[in-house]
Length: 277
Image 1: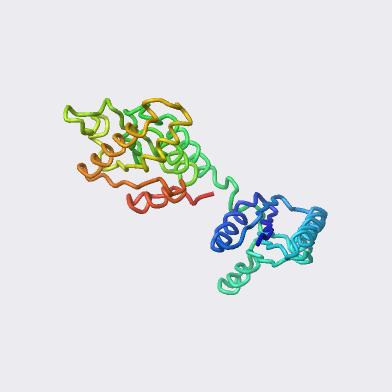
Image 2: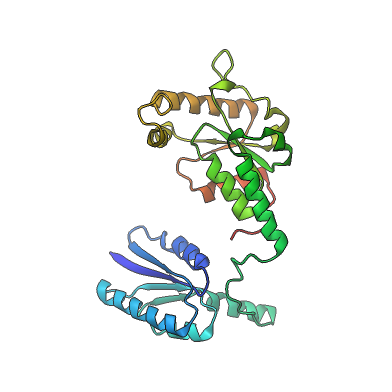
């Protein structure tokens, strides 16, 4: 069974899509065709969209799912005319909150994902620059300013996680690659000198060796770097180091960057400088 789902907003659509996807993924037996419709900020646009929704209802033979975060009451009224099962996020939650708080909402479009205060915006920019400057062990002398230092073998997810932490939470994340240069004579990894003074900031990432080999093979096919033996050896050495030095770590194989970041923040007790966008 396939159903069409519309995520509709008079702003970016990020909130409607995020919540909508979270809800619909709970229904594994239903296949959804998900369509995000941002900036439906006029009655004319809303009426045109209603025609699209009604067309989808005819095509599917089932009413579409409509999840919206429309603020303007006139536009909401038009969307309600569509042939679909409607979840109006703002009216569902804002009206009870207005009663509890004994005041009316300002009903401002785009408040969640706007730049907002200048200091928050600058914090985001500084954190992203920090992540880029300190990617892949580039500037170890700045580690005293880092909130967290991600460590792990090449291609295990350090860079995207660092950037996500910076962009979404303002966390200053550096990352350092564990390589063969850090091997002891017995073949085990040792903690690199650059990391030793900042051991309390370290968080390890690991990954299934088969998945790592597949990722590396896209970058350097048929190389020692992407071979199964090499990947198994590196992953084993990294996990051995984490356990020996009591470095907390997470297996990134089946987790999204959002899940990795959230779990790491909780385990490390990191302070978010602002809420996610």
